[in-house]
Image (cartoon, rainbow over the protein chains, first blue to last red):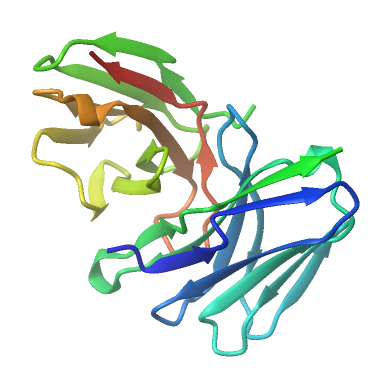
Length: 112
Length: 114
């Protein structure tokens, strides 16, 4: 079954509000990746976190990797309408059947 | 443009039929992945090939099969199609076979089974 869980499934915010999506794995991850899929588009790689406790920033986006390397979060400060889309986390899981497994994603909508 | 090309973009077919989806990876990428995206299921991993060999397998139905050819393009074959197979099918590619490699996605093939 799905080994990478993501919450919330949906989030609607007013423009200017902050947004956070959370990702959890049942197993320790070697790294976590984040992707964004715009409506009608395809997933696009945003960032990869590798180290325990790592924090990376891309403008208004802040990505964190947990100390135990089992959870991660994406925080967007002061959302804009251009932030609309589905945000996916993804991790390599599966032991001998090692595969890039995606969470179900968080759909962010922004009210202007 | 990710550099990954998928054809066709749209496909409408009847139940019981067989279709083939094609994917050309980015130049230099050895891995090809196939994912199925339905409204309520997110991105479901189907299968991965690395340099012509099957590398990892997800919950791919027996009616589905895939292969990667010597020129590294890949095809996903879906047979005995059912209504529930209607979905967006994405191909992705990466340089490496796993671990810390990022995936580049194509535009997807939207399959509608009627």
